[in-house]
Length: 219
Image 1 (cartoon, rainbow, N blue to C red):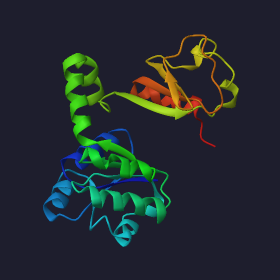
Image 2 (cartoon, one colour):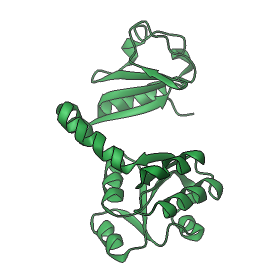
Image 3 (cartoon, one colour):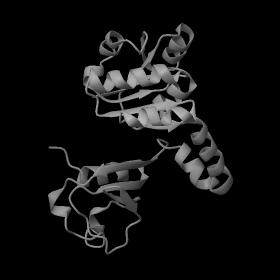
Image 4 (cartoon, one colour):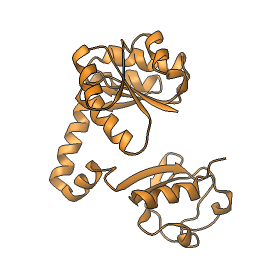
């Protein structure tokens, strides 16, 4: 399945690069000729057309998309793209860049994960000021290390504590966060996994991949 990014500007291309570095199949949709050619020159799979058109999204493979991200500079276009992804193509995970903070609620009301662009920039600067080593590590995801969140679906691990399953966690990665419902916490050795828990693994890319395969095996 594919990830579709509508908007092939700097933000869209930067996101596409990060996702492809983690092994995702990404298609950029862009109607601006210059941005379209630049995306293709940089090696991305790019589909020409207006992402607010259901026909264009269908041609880009929205019927087989697991994620749609709208990253244009126009909030009205972004909202329409997200609504098409949800209603026309039944995409489960829809994200959007929101350029004006006052528009965030409009996206959240329809179930879109809204990324407030000014706030995201402020947080990035704050991270560089307060925690530069971690910020650089996160910026370079895909360069031999990774952070991934998965749902625990290995039934033999449910009901066991982190200490009990420690041997199942590959060297080179750690369980950074356990999410349960609307809450999340850094686990201790006594934390017991429950069905539906989400685990965030942090560490070397290969170790993280092995951990995902163990805790979230494919059917």
